[in-house]
Amino acid sequence: MTSDGPEPDAGPLQVRGTILTVRRIDAYHVMTVVAPGIAARFRPGQFVAVAVGGQDTSMLLRRCFSIHDVRPDHGGTVEFVFSVVGRGTQWLAERRPREALDLTGPLGRPFPVPRDPVSCLLVGGGYGSSPLFALADRLRERGCTVDFLLGAASGDKVFGALTARRTGRSATITTVDGSLGVRGIVTDVLGQVIHDARTDVIYACGPMPMLRQVTALARRYDIPVQVAVEESMACGIGVCMTCVLPVVGSDGITRMVRSCVDGPVFRGERVRWDDIGTIPLDAFGAPGWEQRRLRQPRPGGEHTAGRPGHGA
Image: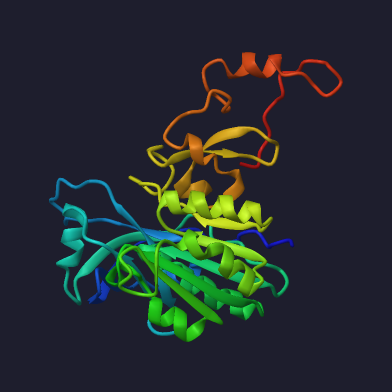
């Protein structure tokens, strides 16, 4: 199966949008902001970087959130989901309608979508499932069937369970405490869901350990998987290098790529999950990389420095 690459767009914008609503959905907050330019450019899988704290704040870094939904034809709204985990998200949760919010987007590379109608399984963990619903709409436009597999620690932390059940061909829910759906984690039932849905391709977003396990199981079934990684991002535009992770390019060379501009969507099998948080010794640019490349034999027995190409 082949897929279209990310669609071209006009690039991100920095805007001051008006907050339309801030509402609580179980364990999470959902914010809707009027930002027509961002809504018009959005592709599923992209995110926004939001300034927090106001003009006189000491919180200089933006907070990055996956875009859950856009409504270009209804005032140009952008919606994102977040959990209160620190001062920045607490400040966001305290905002009120009609206040202004500074945000930049849409940022990052979107999910590629299949050229032909196929069976797609969308796997989400916690509020990592939020970008999957716009993707589901896009896939259905392409004639694809959509099945959901969502999980979290408890029922109040599963985002979008009702929407998944209403709009998906099937929706399987798992919770660690058994308060909603099947007791366990998504990878406990992933094999059975793949079999029942006759899955052709998997899209996943959620905690990094979940993405690692989903990728491993997808490879076992020889199913391509696209993952939207949850790496901490300080700038969102590729400057600070805090969100780098090792990814193998189409040329077989590992590079430390930036999740915010080279991702957040990657082919799961190309992410070196065991080496996240480190710089592998064989990664391009690592100390001694050229010497190690020189020692690698060609198939005919010759040695080569192996000039790097592109394709991470």
